[in-house]
Amino acid sequence: MPQTIILASGSVIRQELLKNAGVEFAVDPARIDEDAIRQSLEAEEATPRDIADTLAEFKARRIGEKHPEAMVIGCDQVLEFKGDVLSKPKDLDDAKAQLKRLRANRHKLLSAVVVYQDGKPIWRHVGEVRLMMRPFSDTYLDAYLLRNWDSIQHAVGCYKLEEEGVRLFARVEGDYFTVLGLPLVELLSFLTTRGVLKA
Image 1 (cartoon, rainbow, N blue to C red):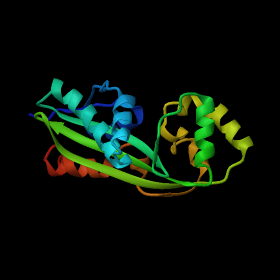
Image 2 (image 1 turned 45 degrees about the vertical axis):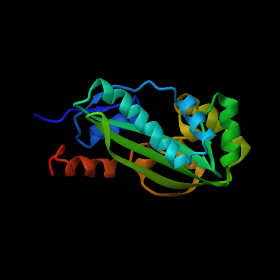
Image 3 (image 1 turned 180 degrees about the vertical axis):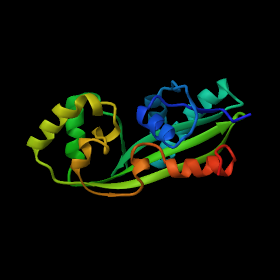
Image 4 (image 1 turned 90 degrees about the horizontal axis):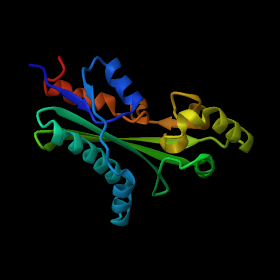
């Protein structure tokens, strides 16, 4: 009997990545208070990498408790800028302020994935991508936000690299799938090694 795989994420792009890779899975988004967990971790001076990993595990555990026999995939992504973790923008003004901070600077995206089964995490990985934003003008920034707000308002960093957000960058160093929020190559390798996917 094939192993049941559940993605504990409502992210359309993560679902598309797995589907395009030929993985059969169900979707059951985990409902957790991300802001409260993140604030608690930041108060304990957790690193951005640990914050991403912990949030991914919380999501995997929440759905794993409902489906212990399944292989549950929990994911989270955080943006680290000069040691700070930036949250998703609250509104258009917040998005503009964030992008002005990131402009002409480097930042990191940390994409964590945790696989949960039988009441415990059985695999985890945190992918890291380094990005350099170009010194775009205020005029371009305003127009970019107006054109793209509906798409980017729930995106960490206020951009999507698979859309116009790519024009904000001078350089991207790392794995494209990790930018999209799922270290896909590493996850597929794990699933193949476990015999869940045919080699």
